[in-house]
Image (spheres, rainbow, N blue to C red):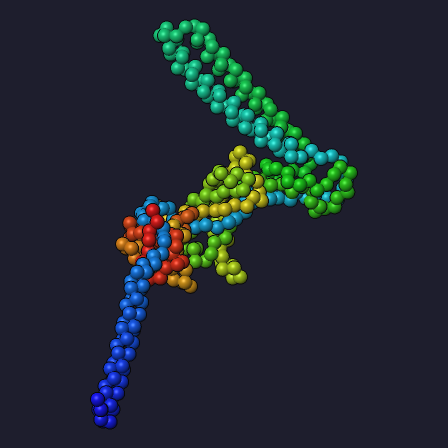
Length: 357
């Protein structure tokens, strides 16, 4: 068979066109296949959730207070000095003499109380004895108790008188009944007019001296209750009342000095103890609180994250005082809202979360 030249050219052109179309189809199919595979992988990967723990905001009864620190001081601190030159011949006043007077006064008060108690019992039983409701032996017993109480009272009075007499033998008198903190001279020392002999302190009551920031001064007034602890008795709380607010704020520290009177009849507390103080400024009230661990600080702004469903939403709040592990929320949260307390540093607004149970 004989083909013409133009027929050969036509066949070659047709073959080339088909080949190009086939290649294009293969490329389109490959691209579509890759796109489908990529989309399938994206859809197969699950959305990442941030694990968190939450705590429901709750309403609690709180007692607003300020916190500060202070130091216990003697109620009075006095230096006893000489008024003339001379040699110290004998020292009568020592810590023991002052304590003897104090012990004797306490014994007298106890004896008086026992006498009052015995006398009251005697009157009651005497009436019963008249009506023959108790035996003579019972009546005699109470009569004896009254007599013994009277004797103890007289003995206590005599002991107190002796103790005071010992104290009065000193030539230089203490201006207050107190404890000797420091003896500065010994027998045989030559002293000049004005020489310090003793330093004495009054430790019942004590003064609690502290300072308050100027922003909190408006919440203070004399007569307010204070509570405090000391390291020596860390599990025990002591009480006092504000007795003095200084008239000026210190310019360097911007604080106000204040004092509270602290009863110390048992002499448990000592001058010099460091105290951690709470000052109750207002009446107790109901308020929404959250753990302080939930709070995030951004300069003056305080944020929390609240979980609704499986989504965390950022919330700006206004806080009041802190009470131990909890902070008072003045605005921005309602009771019952689920606040993130663990994992909040990994969150941003709108992130999906998994709440650990």
